[in-house]
Image 1 (cartoon, rainbow, N blue to C red):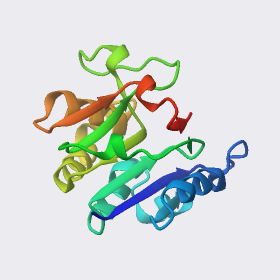
Image 2: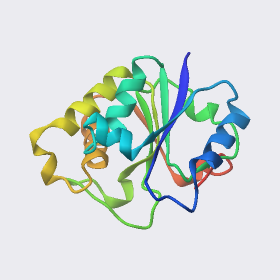
Image 3: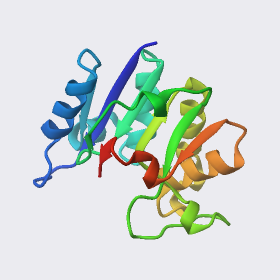
Length: 172
C-alpha cells in the first residue's frame, strides 16, 4: 500500500511554514513522500480553481492512499487507525468557527478539505469531475461544496470524522 501526504502552501504564509508539518510527518512516517504544492505551481498547471481535487487526482495515479493536510497542521501521532477501513475516503467536519453550507446539508455536518484521506481513484476522479463542471461559479466554496455533495449524495463509502477523532493525532 503506497501512501503519500501533500499540502498546499499559500503564498505569504508566515505563521506556520510547511517545514513544521513536514517534520511531524517524517517523525511518524519516515519514508513516506510529502509533497508541497505552491500557489505558483497551481497557477501554472491551470487548476487554480480546484487545486486540492486536481492535485490529489494526479497523486492517485502513483499512490493508493493520498492524504491532504492543511499547511499549518501538525501530526502528533500516527494516524493509521484513521487510514484503516474499507472506505473510498475519510473526511473531516468543518474545523473552523466559520459556518458553511451547501444545498440542504446542515452547517454542523459540513465537511472541510483541511484534512482528507483519499483511498479511491474513483472518488478522486468524481470529485475532480464535479469541480470542473460548468456550474462551479454558483458554489461559493467550490471544492468543499462539491466534496460535501459527493460525500452526502454520492454512492461512495466515506468515513466522516469529528474534531474529537483528531485529538492527540493532529494539531490544528
